[in-house]
Image (cartoon, rainbow, N blue to C red; front, side, top):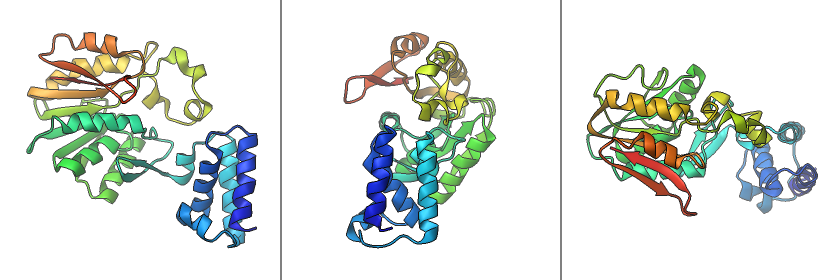
Length: 272
């Protein structure tokens, strides 16, 4: 079976199963099976797959047809121009979370210390450390997620200190200048309405923020003043429809601002 024929067959299978972006998905999975870049598939369409490559490609397609996200099959996801390793122990980094990076970069200054609360893959902490050189810490309640974050930090050359703890419990008082977080914010009442790739595969501890989706926001807002230095910042991603409720939690802070994404949707809140 040639690369060209394999790709066409995979696209048809994915289309018939109503898998999103069938051609892109087929390209990524085939390139992963052959250990090449996607452009290679079109530069060498006549190249035949080995038996081992064909077996791997078939397994990857089968997993995707069962709903397993492509990123968990390949074990990687790009974020802010860098490749992060991901496993089912961590949430897959989304492009909208890059708005948290942008908001934090506006407020980070030389010599500051930052903390990524609920770090998952470590995408925020690693990115901000590499972009600014700041001293970076990251925490996650899941030891498995903390291990993934530590691995990404080491592989990408970012000296991030990763701790396994509940939110900020292990962080010293008045030791942090800026907290970033993409907290769990999906209400449990919306569980059945999620895409199966999200509902059935991504870690629930990183997805759901209680019945209303606001539980972890409340806990972060309540705990942040203990670890922040005077004038410190809290920057969080906002779930859909929760901006007013989170802004109300931060009403007593000296400064608070909601920043929208390019579509005008409230995406980040930054408070001082």
